[in-house]
Image 1: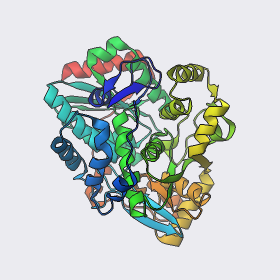
Image 2: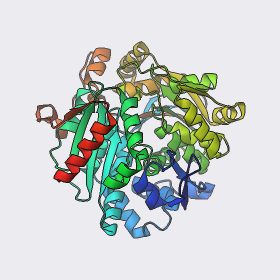
Image 3: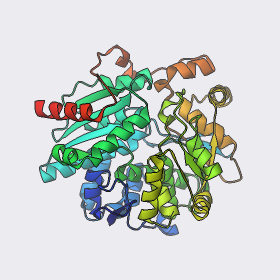
Image 4: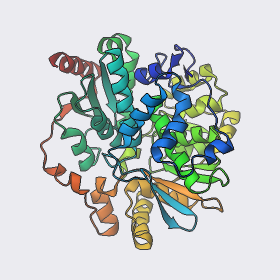
Length: 462
């Protein structure tokens, strides 16, 4: 299995090389050269298996000869042993033909744990085998950072630096990033919004002297292994609802497009997915793009669903790559146009995107109303991001079962949830003392040179 860049001008890599590299050297994102498929019999055979066994069967074709079967099974087992639900991604019924996939039973109470815990184990195994050390820099709008810190804290072969927008994450999200006291963990509160953090990260990757000097690696959703890990729960859920003999649709609250792109990969592999519905908050660039065929940045407005407060959706580039017939030059041109704030999508590419994706949005008031109505109608307490998904999912119900992804535990956003339904969600017992712990955080300006110097100094001090 080989991996190629969405911009067509970077070295072709193996799975392990692509995982450890993150962003391609031409600025593109790595994708598989071909998508492995599963037959109807292969998918039917997943019924009744554990989540870990399904993960092995779904992901194994993508890793090539990077690991033996026993090594890969051990990596998967260690990745999910810390989850607090035996089903890992259990289903709850919200109403007739509408289901909620709970993705918040991992160590940091967010869907990012499914990918990050696996990546942590993959990195640890590969780096130990190679006797190498890397510097991980990540940008987060809230949940990726805490999941990355939890996955890599205390590891000997990794230093972790997480950029998050100062004052634009919830208190719980911030505390999850700033309270770990491991020497290899560094939380950096950057002035600006998430797009500024993400831009700084990409600038570091594109500065090859810095990148090579600190052995930079990325664990944002630019990393293919992140997307691959998320493909698994589409299979486990669809099989639970009758696949391959029954089609299933999914609604995904998303800002960076990674989670819903994983659903697209599952569909390309042969999973009978009828529709993939993009759910956005008031920062609705993806919904506007699907509606108008123009990707136009309009600035980020802070919301009660901060992990979706994004205008540059990195993984959308992977979808564009397929929509343009895997033409790297066409994608590179679009990304160059985006530097000016916008690009137009061709009619043919737009038709391809609309063949797979629908979209919708939820305002702040609609999100709050959905939290309240879900609690009254089902007893389910939704985080604001999950509520965005449920609202849009309700608008797209049909005779095909609809599964909305619940991306975070409501206790990560207690103020918004309490305002919506009059009840403050409690943190799980194992996190009850988090708000009382001291924080380790450095506030930094939106300045590339300052960030690079800080990272070099911290590494040297270790």
